[in-house]
Amino acid sequence: MIYLLHEALYKLETDLGVYRYLQVLEQRDFRALAASLLSFAIVLLLGKRVIRQLVRMKIGDSGLSDADALKTHANSKANTPTMGGVLIVGAILVSVLLLADLRSSYIYLGLTVMLWLAAVGGVDDYLKLTAKSRGSASRQGLYAWEKLVFQLGIGLIAGYFLYRQGSGAEDLRHVLTLPFQKTYVKGSPSPGLIYLSAPVFIMLATMMVAGMSNAVNITDGMDGLATGTCAITTVGVLVVCFIGANQSRAQELLVPFVQNAEELPVLAGAMIGACLGFLWWNCSPAQVFMGDGGALCLGGLIGYFAVAIRQELVVLLMSGVFLAEIGSVALQVGYFKATGGKRIFRVAPYHHHLHLGGWTEQQVVARAWIISILLVAAALTTIKMR
Image (tube, rainbow, N blue to C red):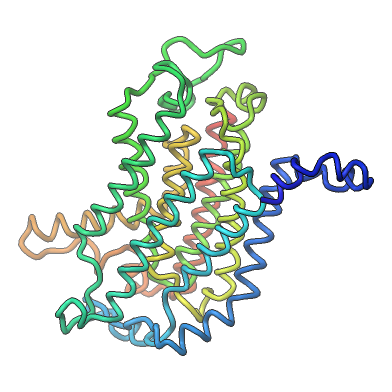
C-alpha cells in the first residue's frame, strides 16, 4: 500500500522535494528488511495485550498428553495461553499489505496460503478448547483427515496457480532444480534441464505445502523450538528469494530466475520478523504458544516459498530439523504397527525422546537452533558450489 502510494504520488513528491527521501521504497531489498522490522515491532508491542486477552478468554493449553512419561512436562505448561499464532499472522499480513507491491500474484498467493492454513489451525485450536461441541469428553480438535483435506486442498490451489505463472512448457518457473546442477550456460538455459509437467508440478507443490505444514506443527512442542527454527530457516529462504527473483544474481549463481517473483523477499522478511517477535514471548518459560493456527501457516509458507522460487531440495535441506521431527513420528507409528507394539524412540516426536533421555528442554531447543543454522549454511553453500 505504501509502495503503491509512493508510485502514484511521484509527481507530488517531486514537487514537494521529498522524493529523494522516499525513493528508497523502490528498493525491494529495503522493503524486505523494513517488513521484517515492522512485523517484529507489531508482535513485540501487541504481545502483552494479546496474551492478557487470551488469558481473560481462558484460551489456555490443555496440558494433556497421550504419553504418560510426558504428563509432568505437559502439566507444567497447563493454562499457558495458546492461539498466539494470531500475532504472527496479523503482523505478517499488516507488514506485507503496507510494504509489498500488491500487484504481485506471488504475494496474493502466499497470503492465501497463510490465511487458509491459519484458519484451519485456528478452528483446530478452538475445537480443542471446546471439546463438548464435538460430543467428546476428551479435547479433540479437527480429525487428522479433516486437516489433511484442507492442507492438500491449498497445496493443489497453490500448485495450480504457481504453474500458470510460467509461459510455456520449457519455462524456468517449471524446472526441477537438482543439486549442483547449472541452470545457465553462457547466460542461456542449460540443455538437459528437467521441466515438470503440470500434474507433476502440482503434486510436488501439494506435497511441499502440506508436508511442511505438518512438519512444523509436529515440531511445535517445546518453548521456542518451532518459532526459533522457523525464523532461522526463513532467513535462508529469504537469501534464496533474493537470488532467484533477481535475474543477474540468478544467472551469476546459475540458479533458475523466477520472473515476477521480486516481491517474495518482502513476504519472507515479514515472516522472519514475526517469528522473532513471537520468540520474545515464546522463549522459555513461554508466556504464550502459537497453536496450530501459527504452526500450520508457517510451515505452509516455507513449502510455498520452496516451490515458488524453484528450490525445493535446498529448502528441504534447510528444514532438516522439521523433517527429522515428522520422520520420527512416521517411523515410530509404522514400526509400532508392524511389530505389534514395539518402539524405536522412547516417545515421538524426537524432541521428547531427547528430553526423556536427559536433555533439558533448553538444551534440546538451543541445539535444534544450532543444527538449523548449520543446515542453512550448508544449503546456501550448495548454491555457491554450482
